Length: 209
Image 1 (tube, rainbow, N blue to C red):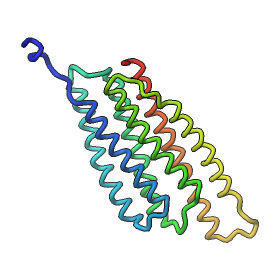
Image 2 (image 1 turned 30 degrees about the vertical axis):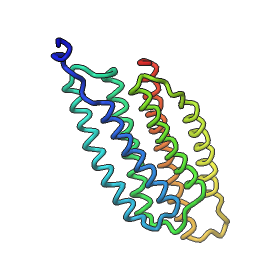
Image 3 (image 1 turned 45 degrees about the vertical axis):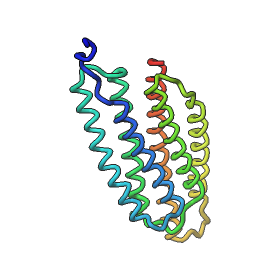
């Protein structure tokens, strides 16, 4: 009976998992855009709507955290994971907007490949986060790092491809190359943010298993 009178923790794990589900959905839709989905405007609009909902959830988690006395894990870990996921979502949404605005006539293979791996990496963070909720190490860190290394190589190849222009390059081809260099720069930024998320989840797991 005494236990029922104790203050209870807010559902932080569920809120973080809900936030992560939004991250995965946006990663999936971004992959569709870079894979040549002709509905880029509609997909970008859908991503923007998910990002707006994610932003509300991010603020809700932060507000609830500051108001809570009891948390299931260190509040600093919840704060970091919440912020990491928000930054990943923002980065993906900004990239989707840029792709839609650029109205790309074709999509380069390296970008499609990296976007597919970003979707895989996002799903791995889901598994890692689920492990954290159960105080269990799911041992996905190595798989995540291997994907990150593959992405770094593919991005480098993609940028080199953009720079490999003939001496008599046409203005439209030069503009296209510059657009893709900017997109690859955004991809690298998202990869860095996803890596921060995975590392912070891993740190929280190590402290709580």
